[in-house]
Length: 150
Image (cartoon, rainbow, N blue to C red; front, side, top):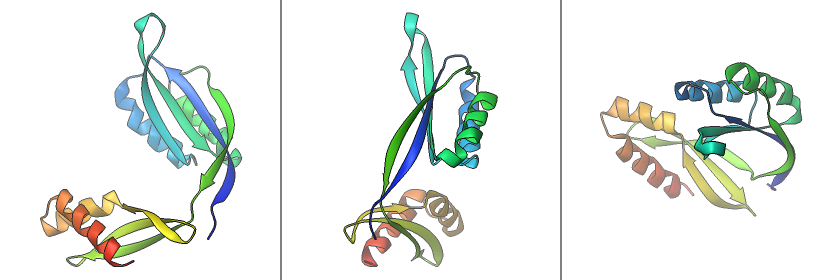
């Protein structure tokens, strides 16, 4: 398993006139359109105007659809495009058992060694609801179980 290098495009748009309640939908729409990641950063523009920078990272294949979503779901009338390289670690998905509930774990590798583990949050919430536990306790149990399985 080797780190892969991919070409990617990052789109950025400064937006100062969008109802902030719309941002979660914008992010969801961008991810549905094929964006690898999308995020919003608070900024301060000229004359002290509060605003946000919307950023989306995608492949060339999904670029047109990502641009379409940015223009249709936000109030921006322009965006910046940056071409870049994206380095991606090999990863593996598996599940651990937490008191009979399955919780997904993503592991990332560098030079054959596990260097990152991430517990799937939606699984944590579902297990917490099913078990009557706090999400904090399920997260701790799943994290401990993922380390035990190395």
